[in-house]
Amino acid sequence: MKKSFVLSVSLSCLMLAGCVDTLNQLSLDKFLDAGSSAGSGLTRDEIISGLKEALVVGAINSTALTSKTDGFNLNPQIRIPFPQEALKAKATVEKMGAKSLVNDFELSMNRAAEEASKKALPIFKNAIVSMSISDAMGILRGSNTAATEYLRAKTQNALTAEFSPVVKNAVQTVNVTKYWNPITSMYNRTTLLTGEQQVNTNLDQYITQKALDGLFTMIAQEELKIRRNPTARVSDILKKVFGSK
Image (cartoon, rainbow, N blue to C red; front, side, top):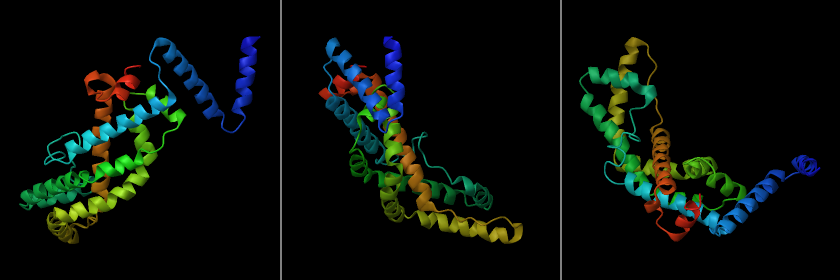
């Protein structure tokens, strides 16, 4: 009888707007009650505060790593490669004796990402402003990179829009086009004979996406440290929230 009643209530709830939030609230209440009886004493505010702080700590550490010289360039996980759609141009100009130009161009792209990373932290902090109860529950009991995945899913478009001018300025600062334009010019001249399509890569867009990919990769690694390594929990709230798992 009790099971039938619970099933009936659940099915009825699923037909109503906001049912998912209600069920998540009940799940979180159950989790909090269990945590309280076990001595952890976590509150909803503490969970959300702890998750936000984990993202902020991850953003601080990742931008510190990526914004230093060779933060992108010498990190094989996030180093920005020659644009995939322009690999024919790379191969062609290297055969023409301009390999050093290609190397300089690749270095300049990574320098642009490193330069842009210096401006990334406030953008990330501003993005970590709202987290619902259901979001918090999913992140706390989710995968080892659930907080990073949440941040990316919720903020990707906004971050891209805000980060694009930062990258554009960085591209100009380190003179990426100084190396890119000669490469494309050399290659595009050969297409008059080969009939291949000319290169017309949007460098700002390419570097923006790769820079964000790299930053999120590093944030995910920082989150993993916080979840797995107690010494990475640098505040009381992080110790309390992630130590309760």
